[in-house]
Image 1: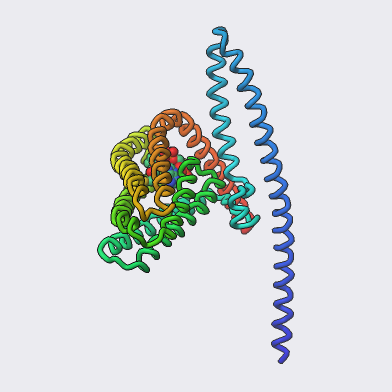
Image 2 (image 1 turned 60 degrees about the vertical axis):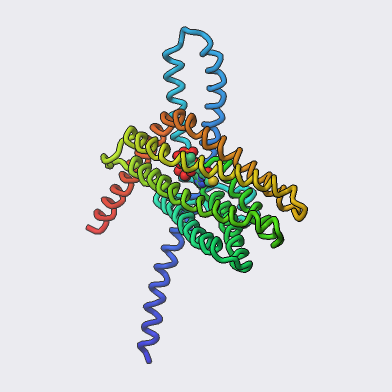
Amino acid sequence: MSEVFDEWDELNADFKELEVANRAYLQYLSELSGYQKKCIDHIKHQRYRIGVITKALKDIAKGKENEGRVKELRTNIMKRKAQLYAIEQTLPKENGTYLKIILGNVNVSILNKEDKFKYKDEYEKFKLILSMIGFAMAILNYFVRFRALELSYIFLLVWYYCTLTIRESILKLNGSRIKGWWRFHHFASTVAAGVLLIWPDNETWLMFRNQFVLFNIYISLVQYLQFRYQRGVLYRLKALGERHNMDITIEGFHSWMWRGLSFLYPFLFGGYVFQLYNAYSLYNLSMHPTATWHVPVLCFMFFFLFLGNTATTIMVIPSKFQEEVKLQYRIMSQRLSSQLLNRESEDSIDFESRKDN
Ligand code: COA
């Protein structure tokens, strides 16, 4: 009987330790948010003054006298911007309007580099798995004409694109440089899939159905190629940012990237031509006597997606040239911050072992 009371007393002593640890934790937490605020204010200040200096530099650059110093300052500004970007990635950010509407004010900032990498990797895997399921369902739909199967496939598309928009907004908040068009593309695809879902099962749908299914089979295959490219980029960039990694250089990364892009481009443009062909077929179908409003709306959407995809994909090439220098600085500051982190963790291990001794 007395054992029970002894145990309770022992547990009380343990609880006191928990209380002490929790108090220390809360204190660190309040200090942490103070430092976070301080860093955010400093970043704002740095960006504001960089803007002022850049403007003033434009006037100085007109003359020839300070050419060397102007060039050096421009390089330093670019380097500072990359450093600010790297620091910003370690700080929490407020949700954008879309995430606020969907998730509310929950914090989705990922502050750890490794966790960011995992989240992006998971996003790529999610796209691959869903496009493989989509591929299987599209094949099934091509050979079997069953309305419930057709609708469940289109519903899967609505859900898939809608989920992508949420995941991409979280990625964007956490520093992804995904272009606005691709995010918009997935919003537009959700709407297009929604219109397909409510397109009545009439003659025009029957005339377009197989072409649409074939288009999706093709897109699923292209998505597999995209996955291989994007995952390659992700892992190589990670390796580049690691301080001790000697297996890959920036030049090596770029030559791999250009090879990857030149392999992928013909397939991507094949998809855009298919989109244009879809728009053309829908345009012809819109003259059909049984055509409902869904036909011209989808015709417009396919054409719009064709234009946006083609323009954005073409523009990736010149933007890659401009990004080369930025990438060098970004990787430099990534290495710097991982060096700092390593030094800190070495110091804390040292401290802990001294404490234990
Ligand atoms: N969807 C989602 N994210 C994309 C993307 C897309 N279509 N295209 C690029 N991104 C992401 C990249 O992963 C990268 O993310 P990060 O900053 O988190 O690392 C960021 O956007 C910047 O990418 P960028 O350097 O501009 O391009 P890239 O080299 O990664 O990819 C392409 C270039 C052209 C291969 C890629 O944009 C692409 O596959 N586009 C075609 C998509 C398409 O047409 N889909 C419809 C088929 S009909």
